[in-house]
Length: 381
Ligand SMILES: [Zn+2]
Image (cartoon, rainbow, N blue to C red; front, side):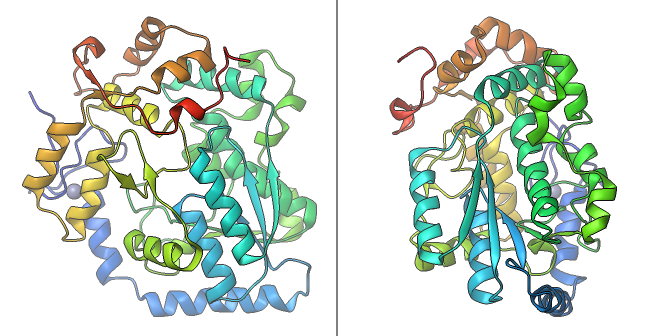
């Protein structure tokens, strides 16, 4: 039996924070309507301009921090901060270890074209691999190190350099129900613990993997006292301007020469979504095994809500492309040091009902990404 899906956007019931009204429309669709109708975006942008004016008055070396990966959202945010709002950022980039060649090119080009100071931090690979396996086993989600580092590290730099303003990209509420568009959520410790690190703090992870807490330093969110001392404001740009992925991608392409790339779990051809991670396909594959749907659903829900695709056309693409095993699984398993049976066994323990277990042997394998042979391989020197 197929999963129950939103009658409007196709999101299935197994998506986190999802619920349907009595007509079968999901809460994300309703939140989306609010984004178009309820929010006064002009007032919101004025609020932002006031925040930027205050930041400039402080005469610090940097007006704000922009956390940066090189994907479409952080690239647009950085462009907007410099070109549209004319304030001076320090770019802080936590290298999760999975940048693809084109992302590295995009990053370099963006930094050079915009003229910015950049701190890139690369965490210990041995610890990264242990954290990936541990969080996969415990939560069916291997991205703990990436999410924890991406959010905690720029906050640490804010404290160290005494830069009290951090500007993130997209706001909460676009695709999940943790936040509404009416709220302007700060990336604070509450959000970090609940939303980002799946309730597992660096202190917990150190114990789980048999490491010392000092080895997990990059993943520690600064204390409230440290943040209060500098009076930190940590805000998503997407809550002050109306976020429009398509439009923003057009801007970074024409202004910065930003390039799309193939993404394993997306439709064939270039895509702007998740180009900054080698293992986007693996994350989506796990989602498919756990929740019965994957990236094509996610992408097409946005196109449906924006009136660019019919529900029927989306369902056709979902049926055609979603049930596929990514070719990058070989590389991923090599990093984790486990075999495919072990991987399947771990993931099967995290099934989210009413999704039904899938036998991975029944799935066809997707095509290999054009750059996969260039990726770092654990077993080749
Ligand atoms: Zn919906």
